[in-house]
Image (cartoon, rainbow, N blue to C red):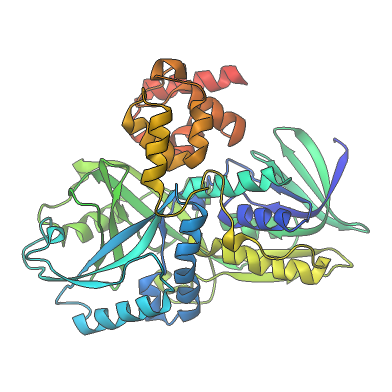
Length: 498
């Protein structure tokens, strides 16, 4: 085993919670290491509905604290990462057989009131018989409401938090499994097995943010029996060819009390999701079931004038939400709020176990974890992330188009579609990706769609990309567009790079 390093905080898990905690902690002056057993965002954090939102339906379950916190984070995160986060308008058609229009109006009024909006526009009422958002719907839908939330590229949100943490000094270990976490007279001894071989790290405090595997870490690596803190709830999505031409998202009510979204996705597609059902299998094996597929197709077809059918499905994905087990009777009623539990103390070695959480509240979750860390290890720097920027996000929230124009002037020989895609993924770092290239011929080997070696090399060097799956589905969504042969060529290229 390699020699032992020492850090203040060791974070287990490279999803959004772990990456956010590592970033906040190292930015306050703690020494930090993080280990992820697979790729960053390879679990729950890349299988979301891609929204930064307050969670309108959580109002029905009286989760007012969660909704308030989430609503207040929308514009904070948009300002932090205006390249990968953008505002979206959501259309909620009134279904006469379900919630009364008065209830919807009251809920949206509360949503606006609680939201702390500065740039996002307020709710308005729509006549769907006249408005363009009514055209794709069945003629029976006449009344609608339009409100604001935001879209996020979920996997990139994780990677950029990890990148910023690394830039500030954190050690980020991908494809590295934590095999043992044991207390000794010096705190914790964390043993790892991964890309760098077997090694050990000493830590004063451990943060277990392993998502669906959080209980497995407690019972396995930490050696404690009987841990049962999370309820695994599966959420699945389907991606179909574009169903309508405008840029709004739909939120549809269903007869079972649940909701689904239909969201413009990657220019040429519509994303439909999500489901809510308990899951008892291994999280790594999660996939959509025939029943979930039928549910999503049926729920969408209840609203769209043209039925959505199986032959329109281009791609599906599923994830497991590790919700804190609060004893709720139905999966959709289980709390989406996060819960933090401290095990041990500063003298014997303390651990903070993180249960639940969501993309929207990840920054606030990290602040809450840091409050507990300060109580255990002593305070260092002050909270700082609320006014920070993630890598590539060094421009104002409403300045995306102006920044794209500047990029276009610097690279006038590049296709506009490529520049826009790069700007949406990398923001101001697009200039680093492109370097001195004048035309696509200067970008190196072509892997299909508009993916070239220059971008792949950047992802390997700066964003821990190792495989074609990392590049095509988590760092980008070009897996929607490249062929099997092109993906294989990319895999060969990555293998040759070592």
